[in-house]
Image (tube, rainbow, N blue to C red; front, side):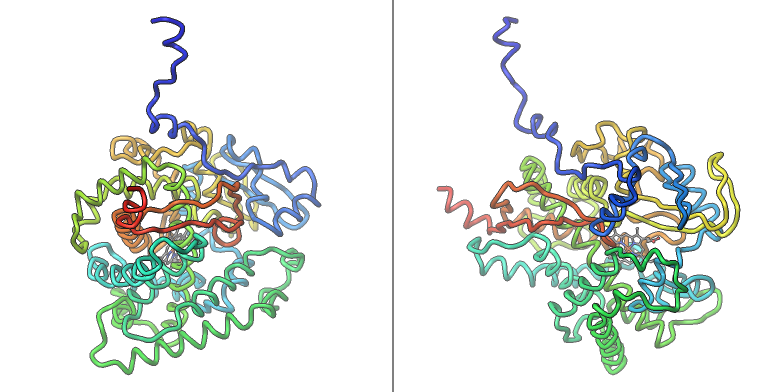
Length: 475
Ligand code: HEM
């Protein structure tokens, strides 16, 4: 081989792109300066992540306000989230922010109230049961596709807003079909609430009793009132429907806890509607946005999804049984949620003194688990910043510690909607790639912000063009 040959870059376009690193949050050593730390977390909770966390199993920070253990050791995570879950309840601070809108719903309740709600709802969220919701999910997807078809690639959309429109359509169809809802207004109310409560300010550090409302609630009272008004209206409208359509809400109305035979009270049902809308909306829309961003950056992956969608779905409407065959689509989604976990922080508080992986923990210590750091931990992942969906091939997945990857958290308080989310996003992405070309209109740098969920900070303009139109334009 001559020197000239060695200098020829004969990697395929796909190989080159595989080495390209997608946008990432540049961690800073903010813990050195309390002012920098405080300024940082007002903008994004990612600023609180200690820089050592990307290589150490845990980092303990002792402050006058609280002791915080940042935990990234998979065995330690199993200890807190699974084996000793009752010793690590949710933090009162977190509950204070969520309860004004979500009341005593599944995400915010503890003890017997949580147990009853979760046990009663579990069967409705099992993958086999959810297959019945696939036509409703597809109806939601098709509603949004109709807009993109009509715009015919002539409109530039903001990626996150557009994915929010898509997800709220799907949620409304699958949760409470047939009830008229102003989806835009509902989406805006949930989004404004989640955005503001995830923005830390000085009052959050005052350790006020939980019954004192945080001042930020005054600014978002309208969104709480709107959400409460809508959940009340939706639950009344559903009770008045006869027969009730078979969707998630009807399933929850009929749900019973096997142990006690108890079902949801009217209040719990309303709180649950608000909870499902909040927990299932932003997270999923952000997962879709980040996946769109990645597919624009890595056209080879978009092309592979397209080929898979054509092979599995052909030109027909998908059915539930197709989802398991959209394997590469799922691998891309899993890699997208590794790089950009929509829920990037889970917080618990130690209810008693304990020892986690040899580290003594005092009662009251806050345990902070950041999926963003865990999923890029040097000891757990090779080339953690590189986009590589093949990490999630069945072969590569099988030896990985279960707690090294947890976009939906794990354990009894893990996400009840994980199968729902995987189904809707797998279908939406495969159907999108089959029919549309998606591309960015600029190459501005992408930055992130962690409020309650991880999201793109700056607008991401994209075009979603029907492939037939895109092909015609190319000819
Ligand atoms: C990509 C999308 C999603 C992600 C990344 C996600 C992530 C999570 C995480 C990490 C938790 C645990 C929170 C904690 O322990 O503090 C959680 C809980 C929860 N999620 Fe999701 N979620 C998603 C979609 C959904 C959907 C679609 C629904 C419902 C339709 C849903 C409903 C819930 C509920 C009700 C809980 C509380 C469970 C309990 O405490 O028992 N989520 N989710």
